[in-house]
Length: 171
Image (tube, rainbow, N blue to C red):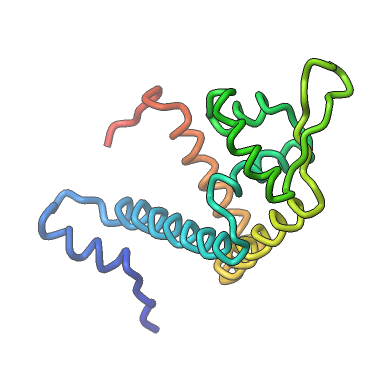
């Protein structure tokens, strides 16, 4: 039985004559990772349109949800890699839409906490459901054991990436 071909196969075939030393397996893995990342990014963008969210709004709701629905603005800014004074505009916009509310901090009366509202949680969960469905659809071609193996293999690659240039192997 012939294996099905994908865009990465075509990419490798096109580049092998140009770069004869190209490792087709490594290039295939890297290209598939890129194409899959692009596919999931497009799926996320489509879900944001469906829920009338801008990407920065979704990212802020996601950061807030990841802190169990309550955080100081400085924590959210840190999570999002932003300057603390830059988060104010995002929070103002989300508060106007009813997705978050500001409340006095129970531990420090000089501080304000940001809370995810029920409406904000519903929009965030709706967006996550759409994206989660697509992730499951894609990975359902693999058995549970294969998904675990893929996750483990990708973890090993990510650990190497996170180490940076340390412990570089020879090609």
